[in-house]
Length: 86
Image (cartoon, rainbow, N blue to C red):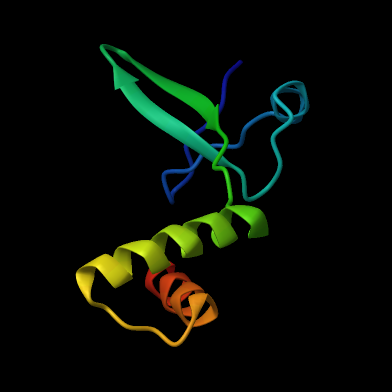
């Protein structure tokens, strides 16, 4: 399928490709240059669930106690972690 590169160096992915690969606006793709071609592959970026955050906060509480870092509670630790991830 032929596509034109725009002035902003963009291409439009055909609707049928988007549907076939279950892609939506805002999804991520990995772009690789292979010899004389460009390869696009969908990428799923997993987000942490609230349960994952709780487990991570618990582990951080354990580590901060070992390292001597003091937070009031795991909620403060989670808040700090979320701020660091922005």
